[in-house]
Length: 129
Image (cartoon, rainbow, N blue to C red):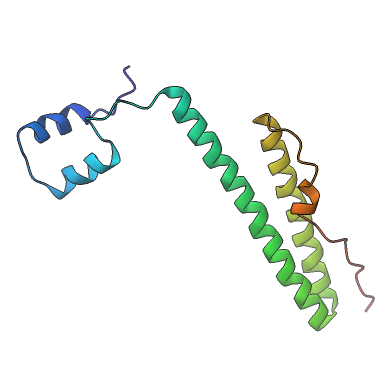
């Protein structure tokens, strides 16, 4: 298996023949058949960087949701809002830990400001009814 898309030869042939098609253009944009193929190492590095960015996005979304829950807690101060906050907090802890593991797996050095960059507030006590 060459690692080339199965349709590459067809695209090359149609381009050489001067064929016009929006579908051909889409394929050409997706994979420049005249450009040298990206090395496997570069492709893997690009995918690793993309996956790490997605992990960080998950943390940022979780922290944003936690921030919104904190506002609701301050406005309502009821049992349901505090329980929702604490549940979001547990989720934020989980995805932040996953990001740390992901960074470790990619052999990034430990960031001494990691917890400062992704702060998680303390658990809130649930009010008694």
